[in-house]
Structure formats: C-alpha cells, structure tokens
Image (tube, rainbow, N blue to C red):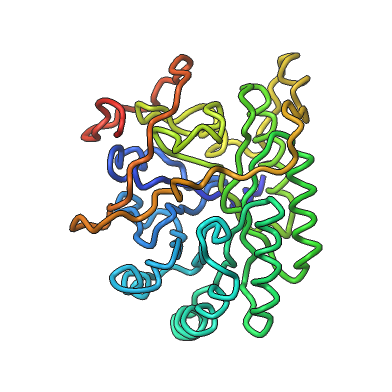
Length: 320
C-alpha cells in the first residue's frame, strides 16, 4: 500500500523544554512527515528527521533575531501569521508586509513556498482571509492555510469545500484541526473520519491535529483529543496518527454509533486564542522564550503505557 504523507506533527515548544527525547519515538516513516511548533526556530530534537515548517507567528517574527533565524533556515515551506484576525493584525498590514518583505525575501531570494495566514473558521476569519487574498492577487500564496475546530466531521468537510471553492487554484494546508467534543468516542470518530478524508482529498496538501503537548493551553480543545499525556507519553490517538492509514473504525457498538455525531449543535468553532499559542515573552537569553501554557488538563485516568522510557527528560510535576 502506498503511504500518503500529509500528516504534520504540531509539536508545542513546551515539549522541547520538558520532554525533548519524546521526539525520538515519533515515527516519520509513515503518514507523519513534517513538524510545526508555531515558531521560527526548529526543535533541535528533530535532528533533521522530518521537514520543519517555520511560522511567522505574529509581527515580532518579521524583525530582529527571529527574522534572521528564518533567513538561515533551509525550510521549504513557511507559514505566515497565525489567526491574525484575533491578534489585531489587519489584512491591509499583512498584505503590505507580504509585498514589501515576505515575498521579495523568502520567495524570490530564498525560494521558499508560502502559506497564507491561517485564520479561524468563523465568519471573522473567513472575511479576513478573503480581504487578504484580494490584496495579494499579484503575488498569491502557494497554499491557503486554515484552522478548524468542531464536533462534526461533515461540518468540517463542508467548511473545507467552501474554502476550496473560494480559492480553487490553491492546495489547502489545515495547520490546526481538532474535535472539541468531551466524548472520547466522538473525538476518535471525528479524528478518524477527517484524517482518512484529508488523506484521500487531493487538494488537501497537509494537515496537523492539535496538538502534541503535556497540557492543553485552555479548555477549548477536548482533553480527549490530546496527543500527549501530562507525563509526556503519547496517547492512543497520537499513535493512530503516526502508524495507521487509513485509521480503522473501532468495532464497538458505541464507537460505530458515534460516527458523525454532533453533540453540541455548534457548526463553527475556533480555539480561544487569548494565550496566542505560546506568545513570545521577554527575551530570556535563548530561543525557547514563550509563555508557558496554563495547566487545565484533566482526565488523568486512561493514560497509556509508554512504548519506551524517556530518559533525561524533565517530567516532574505540572508546568506552571
């Protein structure tokens, strides 16, 4: 069977800080083939085993040491702005920096491919993206980036089809996606359904399920959707995304009944971005200088056994 390599590992910066050796257990020989961490700098523990996707997260990455780090990168694909509509960045400003700095330097001098700003799937996000795309028609992105959070796979597919219809010339990168259902069976059904669908949809270039981190940044994404436990172990969901393609349907009656369920009725969601995905804090003399995520995870039962011990990692206590 031919392996479809579209899955990107959303590896939070706190993993680099707390459990870097966990990266050694990531299987990059299967469907998972790239890594993103919402930052410019590449996780040193990646050790060139997979493609890294740097991100110009917000304005600070367009100047100073962050920008210089990007210019020295051998990355092939760069993400531009993360939910700018929720971070006070106008489409006009983003388009100006795109024309004046991003395209001339990254595309024309360094031959990098560019992902549009990745907006939330609510009306504000889609309107922001529409305005941005209208302003960069002379130098369009190579890929359109989007986020999606919800409970019903059919709603997610409809949203992505709408993006495709709006921008038919471009492949789509779903840089964040996850279920927000609190029911484990629904989370697994959503993840299985969407991963399998995106794998076989030719205009989906790449996608990343949120997210691999010991603690979730807030209560928006379901704790059942986490890919890493508080102890730094990979969850069953993470292992399925690493190893299984297509992801098989669970055979229990409850799991089958959960397929396609929408337990909230909400059709459009976006993760609360008050934390700005690890917004840059004041310089502390190193690259890992983001604000730690507040620990709000729970459901400590049902933590899986590790495939192997994690030596030398700091796994003691909750991160604060």
